[in-house]
Length: 207
Ligand code: MN3
Image (cartoon, rainbow, N blue to C red):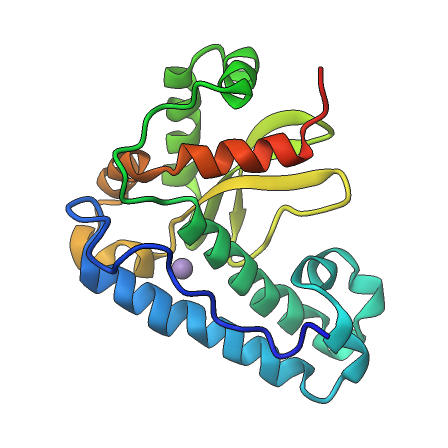
């Protein structure tokens, strides 16, 4: 039984990501925005016992098991939970070293260099029109950078999200107002590469 889904606490203090991300933003983002998605998801599946045994990943990858009248609501709210949990987990207060493990080799092989990777991910995040996310994903064992609108989640049997940046205005407006590019630039200082690398190692097959 996975139900009810529980709010995951941050693994760092609210002020741990300063100066790149303010305490105020993180408090609102985690305690209000993310928590609301958890509560809404639980509310939606309250009356659907069959869905209460499904994992968050199953709710997102097996729409055929979800009654059509709540399919969109599940996509939005299970997505909101999954995406925020990944976003928060991919950040760290530690001075994040660039990746040096097998993920680093894969990034170099796929994008040419870590600088190119950063440029592509930045562009994807800055150019996502309106609300959404930019992602590093592993798709059929290949690294790719994509962006998605709203709370869409790029997850499928052959697709695993490895890293995401939330570019909804609530993720940066209190500190950066309309300056999304500045937020994106600073966010690169916060990436928890050891977490992202471990995520990669858990799903990547030897090339
Ligand atoms: Mn958000």
